[in-house]
Image (cartoon, rainbow, N blue to C red):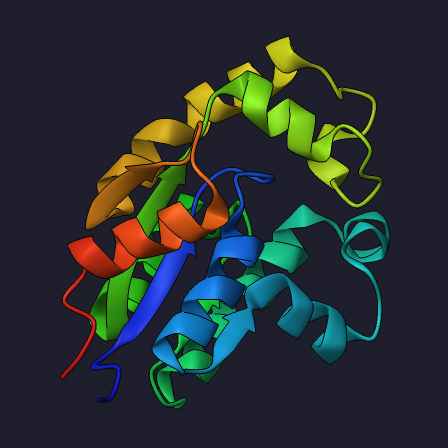
Length: 173
């Protein structure tokens, strides 16, 4: 069988998009792409360096460009950076070439996943649950509007999340 279109995993940083995309890739025997990793490779610098040297607006433009690149790729699993769905042009691009899955978790779960990370520029100096909740609340409407469906990850293993995606998504052509 063959994947009919891309599966885009969106959601807040630390929700498990990268881990779940790797599992989905193995389960479905298809390729897997992480948009943040694509950007790091393309730019030759880390995401914190891009933010520091070129700013968030520049990063968001490069992020949008990754979707143009993916439009020419065979359908695969795509782990999107946490801000990918914040731009309506990105949502339009994702919906045109794939199914968009919104992974959700509580701020407490997110904090437990990101608290030791130094690679989260938007959380620099604000690595705490109230700030994470504030950011999540601001982004949630855009994530929900972009999503074809949502999967709650709290209390689930990455394997269970991957299985839920497969069960809820018409993934094969």
